[in-house]
Image 1 (cartoon, rainbow, N blue to C red):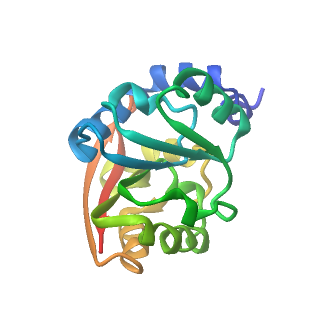
Image 2 (cartoon, rainbow, N blue to C red):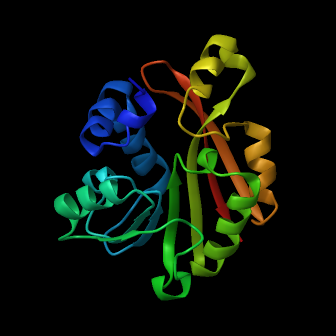
Length: 199
């Protein structure tokens, strides 16, 4: 049985997230880093089945994901309060999305090559409002957590898990300001890098 293929099923993905600590991580990310307020315009790149909406107030939310099953699940559960689009990063009509106070990418950058990330950054930067921010969270290779935990991180479906400095260098190629912190989360206490970027 291929665990990575199983996680493509929304129901299995949701169960795994609860067991693994993904729900805690999602809530922590929203509460401590996004800090949403009612009416805020949020674009969620790689929204999955839309579970983050459980932790958001009444915001103007748009979620994008490449997986049709995830998008269908998101529309079924949260379609009354959010808009969901199925697309990969290269085929979105970015100009029609409007502008946003926050663009977030939870566990997305490590699924994309450097070139794909730079393409994404180029497309989303014009969508940020004057004081808008791009906020990310991704698993990372972190020397202080040791080889066993780094090995667990590398089992992720994303093929581009990076060292912290590599994420930061990549973001600094397009964003003027990049702040970051490292949090150890999930049941394995794995390091994740959280970034807040602006122009």
